[in-house]
Image (cartoon, rainbow, N blue to C red):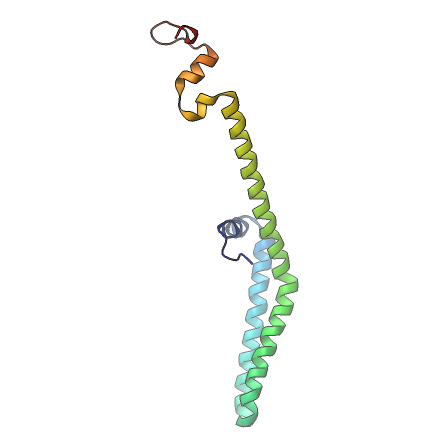
Length: 140
């Protein structure tokens, strides 16, 4: 779902902290997998005591495959898809917020170049601020 991206990990953490819908979907996802794998274990234990060994050898593999496929189908449709959409939307919202912040910073630099560069002279010359020695910025 995240594929190792830093933005995806950050979005996941934000959603876990702030979205009840996301947390509910994540709990349901975990519960579906836990139920599928626990059921598989119980069936294997019962089978180990009731089914002949030569049958249980191949049946154990079949039970594992069925449990994993069932969990993937059930959890994927009911939980993983909505969670993935929420993470993608959160990453998109964060990207948009960053782009807006960058655009605002560019406007600030264009209007007052000295403000962000740390050159106080540029800002003073634009505003006509009087220096400590009594001269205005225009007399520099």
